[in-house]
Image (cartoon, rainbow, N blue to C red; front, side, top):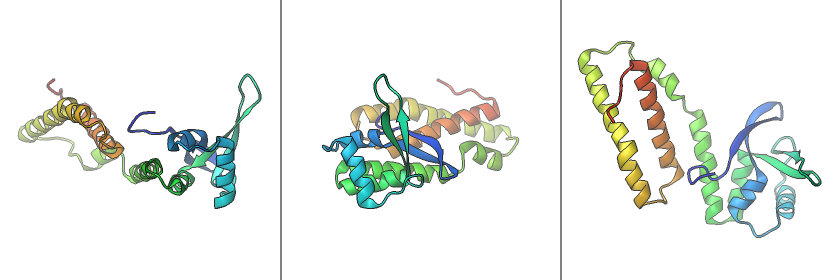
Length: 182
């Protein structure tokens, strides 16, 4: 868990499909709810009409004592739970889930490259691309690091864009077999 990833999101299979989910206990902790977890999740399920095997599944985690009941909830349920908290943490987690959904709908950088990148570049195009990649590398390693040091509250969406730039830079380097100046 980091600033750019407030809670862990993972894939789970239920409702006859593979869906992105999060652990409700982790969401509860992130939202800083004062209510005990068991009461909080039960009340939310009852009050807002969430449906087992559609909005959430129950998983028993075996520990040294008795099994602990975990709820794996869909991101839609997570957004709604964040919204009903009516606080800043609730708004943050809702925006985070929306950003994850938006990113999931976008094509991957590899798909974009194979679809749009010409197979060969002339020497001018290649030198321009190398200059651009050097600038992007400098921005990521020097400028962005300074910005996040000075302004640690930079949001998750900006960090995700930086991660996209890093991926794209590496893919271009690999595809064109070029080195970035350090």
